[in-house]
Image (cartoon, rainbow over all chains, first blue to last red; front, side):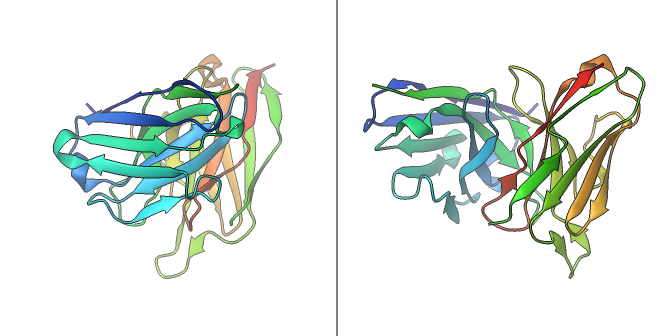
Length: 121
Length: 113
């Protein structure tokens, strides 16, 4: 069955860096767009970044552009999010999610359990 | 950006009664070339990730109970729970995937009265 398992979250000071990972299994990873979605404590959902199955295209929300970098290793069925210059407002649970396989169907049919990133001094 | 709004913010419904959640987009999410509405609904229970319920505005995801239904077109959409069960207590989000950034509504909390 499809599984997405995030890791790499933690506590970091403002200006610091973290690298999130998402281990995928149970499906042909390279055939799917993948995305990172975050949810600040008690708040709603924000699409942070997504990447195409072959590594392109890449998309970044304005709030993270120039600070975050998404990447993937299809040989290792893994998705990554390198987060630099972290700010307090980046504090959130970060979910890894799979886009539908349908062309243009950018809804999210599987989600991981999430990893918490806390940015604080 | 397409802004998604939802109403009400929260509602309490008796077990077995109908719950109706509205979602409005700031621009139409209907793609004229295929007549599809690029709109999805998710359910999020406390401490869990969101779960896909509905896509293309009205197509139920596999395994989702048929008491959940989606309707609407263009800019106005509705998620209906025909007979609320205790396990349906959750926050419900709509999401547009017509254009980037893909955006979510702020959520509607559903409780049992």
